[in-house]
Image (cartoon, rainbow, N blue to C red; front, side, top):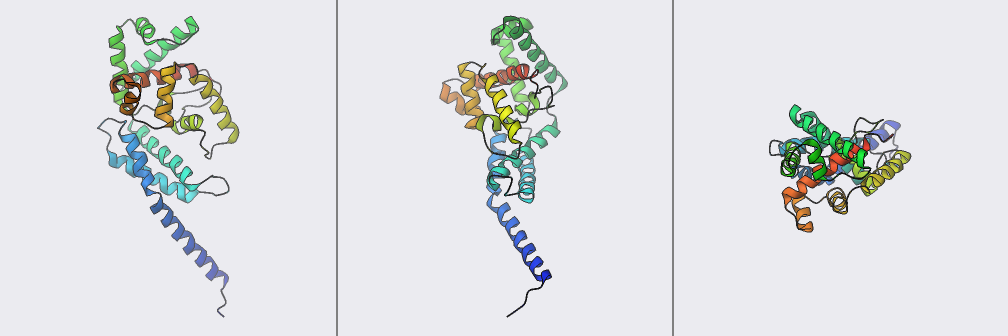
Length: 253
């Protein structure tokens, strides 16, 4: 009977680990294309699909290499988390917002906060438009322009006192309750804050949040559900993000 040395055992384990790594990357490669596509249909045409695929693939490889069964619920869940994060990092690096567009976002956010602080209740689009001194149609056109300028996720939008940014992955975690590597306490705190904040939105806005972030429907699909145009859903979605941005700025997490 052949006697295996320590070196033989290590080589065997290394080979087994390499084979598992390659097999896992191949098995979950479809997630990269699926997630990249879901991002692409929300992005302007200037963002190349291949760039999303490339970033997502690196995220998948990173997930496989760092996966720890004792910490993560499943490789698939962890891979989705890392792929989304990698794509968002790539989009962040593109910095697709112009200075004037960022100024518009800041002005609308400030107006929303001022109106809501004054009246003590959620601001309507009409009230925000009046505060800005523009017609409601002009204000809605501004929302459409902001949405079309770049990917609209809470990643680049929402900031709190302690965190520079609220990532879309963390936002979805709060809405969907998916397991991920985040600390349990932070996860529960995030879910509580988001749930409380989302409750301040109108019924229609809450439906849009649920369909967009939980069910991952496109704006066009949400429009069909609510019998509204894709353009109107686009405006509602942008308005939601700006309202959440204004309301979460003072949150101490």
